[in-house]
Length: 451
Image 1: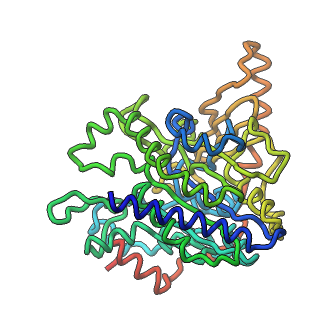
Image 2: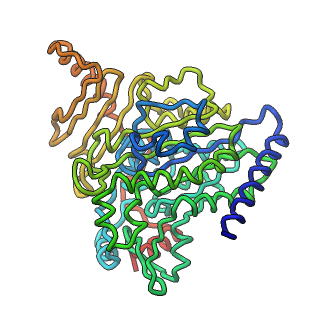
Image 3: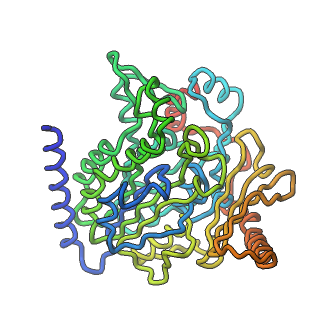
């Protein structure tokens, strides 16, 4: 109880601090900006019943009904969110192999094959939201709860003055110095322990971080809440079968855990731009047992919640399809900033959303992939194999029974998807295996990738 009182007091202090800061910053200074990702949050689980506090705060916000992630897993979607580029353009959509939770196996596989940095990391040439805002005088801050992709090798931290990898902070508390890529569970003094932070821990870290902020400068804060996608890992292994057997309810509880702590965080930025979204959806066990993402571009894995509070763009239509590549433009518009590299963006109109998924970590880039395009009329999914395309899945939003009408919609979408399929990586890469710098080497040692 004492801990809760202290946290509440700290939150009140920070809200007061932000309010004072707003009066100090001159009137024509761009607003403070808050960007929140609820990792793995499904669109249909983010409802007024599951997240009443979020919906109450966002009463006058734009609530998008057809928002989609550019991929169905974390790394490429975050890279697209931060750069405004699609996965084929930033190239950050592939791991060298599918990691395991065995430190010895991971280390051996990393030693046997050099790490192709270009294949897994956001290019160092790619300009991010944080870099542009930092150059404009913003304090760029982040609390990142994801247990896999917060390390320097993935380069998502580009442009952030402070990037708190909360998983590393929790790992240090165990006294354990290394772990496998997907090793989250530990026993400490005979008790179950996970390095994955929950919503309360992330919110507490946000409060601590904002207490050190400069009151004379605007803030850009990015937060990654991990609760939805990490739902089963907050429980001991012997409890997880029960979780998977009733996954829908446990997933809703994970969403509620974010809702319980989100309002004080939102209130700190109530006069600024606030964007709350997700990086992808996930399976909920209704079609098959267990939670799955990163395996397809079906709507359950790509449709996401998207709220925009105090938006600046009058043309935004909450009914129209939108994907996360548009967020960069919305944020820079709110900050009154432009980006010289805008010509590199690929946004063919405001009525389309697009997703890309490389099919397998073992396949070479470009040999097998899926593409989906969402328009106001329909969703079309194509699979690319050995140089050809297969129409895999289509839903008609305008469900006409006329065969010619349906065929016509398919033809239009097929034509629209081809420019997305042919996208090429915008930024230059080395084209060869790079040597890891000292910081990345230390991080990989900590992860157990190398010895």
